[in-house]
Image (tube, rainbow, N blue to C red; front, side, top):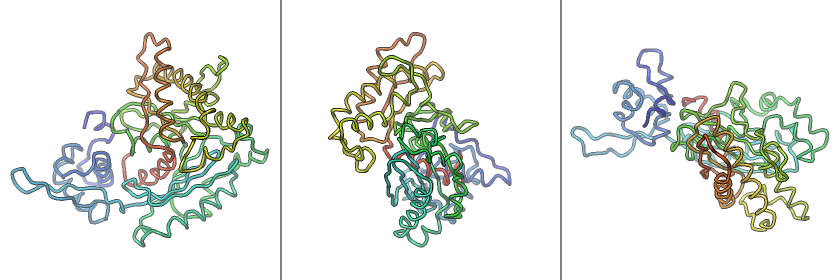
Amino acid sequence: MDGSEIRALGGGVNHIGARAHNERLILSTIQRHGELPGMDIAKLTGLTPQTVSNILKKLENDGFLLRGTPKRGRIGKPSIPMAINPDGALSFGFKIGRRSADLMVMNLAGEVLAEEQTTYRYPMPDALFAYLESGMERLTRGLSPLQKERICGLGIAAPAEIWSWTEALDAPAGFSIWRETDIQAEVARITDLPLITQNDGTAACRAEHVFGRGREFGDYAYFFIGSFIGGGVVLDSKVVVGGKGNAGAFGSLRVPGPDGAEVQLLDAASLYLLENAIAREGLDTSALWTRPQDWSGFERQLGPWIDTTARALAHAIRSIGAVMDFEAVLIGGAMPEEVRARIVTRTTAALAQLDTRGLIPPAPQLAQTGSNARTLGAACGPVFDRYFLQ
């Protein structure tokens, strides 16, 4: 564990009264590094071995940790690694997208126990929250009584100011009802589970940080290409939310558009542009949003869209590289992995053609989490709020 990760997790506190912090610190350390014996946890956290031993016993008794196979080979008693108990806590994740909504139930180890999706032309609150209510009931049918008791909350990932995209979604004037919709109040009518809401780009970034390639980098930028492109920022091995919850709003970056005029990145590198191109050919666009994803019928439109997206991303990466010395830019999206890989390759080539004198732009790389990153990140919200260090 390097210095940046130690700073990210925070130092241990040994005095009485800081038990909750230390429990979170130990759970976070095990979550990030995998199963560990007590002595290794003490070294990584700065806590005393006795403090670690006491907390491990409590977390095991409370059902959050499991004992691994004793490891021999050292002088003295064999060390016993401790691992996260997947059933220690469960949470719901709900992603509200422009063309689809995804719902899942996830355990403490990040395993998706059940999930489902609904698609639509545009999202309306009444239909969405009715779907959420019935979907939560369906997803819990296959859970054990203990798992149901361990559900700790609901996380929702949604785009900021969704009501402002009426024209791009070809939605009716009534779509503006989202401006007056209180998500907290709507959810309270459905369930008394604690609710955590976050920007969908930040949620996707959190999923990549926790379950994807986040262990490889301390500082990186993240793009998620959905109906509208968004993203997130990780500094010092922590997902940065920002004072207004809008850090990593890369969709607003100014880049050259297809005709050379300056546009926002979201108007040059978003899936709605591909959708429009497919629709102009008279083809059914629903396959873009349903899973499993098969885009083989869209190659005629896909190739030009990838080229345009890559050029715009290259300009955006050059801009953010002038602001922060990121180690990498991870690119994910609501699309097949093969398509994401092509975007990364083309973006790398386009970036190499730009004038980057005076800076070293971060290298574009393929994110690990896929189309469900926003839903995974939403489900992380309640878990991290209660059990891990942020």
